[in-house]
Length: 319
Image (cartoon, rainbow, N blue to C red; front, side, top):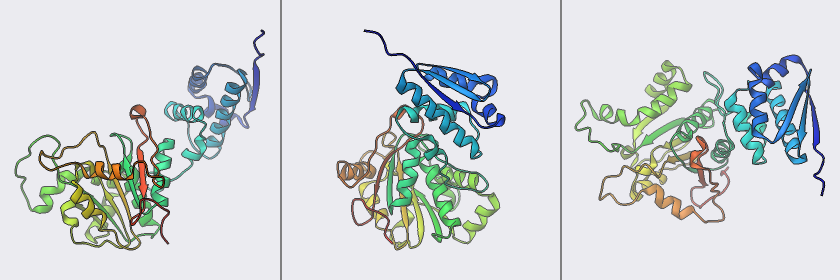
């Protein structure tokens, strides 16, 4: 039985300047694409010809079309971005849907880098309470802070409150000098780092002096009702079930909560019981109303998501 004849797909790229960005320096991006699919790619002038199996040739053609759209919209292409675009196309996803989503514009432009991050951003925007569980380095906390800053700039909220449990990571630091705020400051430093990366230091200082941005340990949340606020609980794997319940019941009118954590890095002391984040995950897992996509741990970026709405297990944002 004769094998089917190869299919040719031709892509015409408008403009020489787009062609340079599309192929990369010394054709490094072209070689990356060709090495990722069982096809042959030939370039002549502004025309790209892809030859191979029909489905693979059409997929590579769509990839080049997506890359051209990104270039036309002012994005620059590099090996990392093209590599992620290839992974998305293989999963039948559109890179333009991910890379053109803008989370924050200003001192630093923040955008999702994977479809998992895009889904995370959409979940936070569409739900009152979002739980994000995933390995370190997936952008859980960073994207949450970016979304909080964007909401503040858009005047959707009046305050940003960042909190995390003051739990040491496997070592005893002893008694720290200073007042209570100075003692807990080292535990909250990662949240400060994200703020300073997105806003000018003097702006952060001014907003903190006015109480618009508040960074506090989880223990300081008891007894409060937080209205018109964007509240982020980081390192939530180190909460107890009682602390998690206490935190979630702080939610007031017009507020959003994002809870992030990595359940493989639990530093709760012995005798403190099970992680509150694990308890919440078990409650939400398997429910038909809780979105819980799964991402591979070796993906580098792409957190697991468990979005829900306060007062129910899941649901759209309340008006």
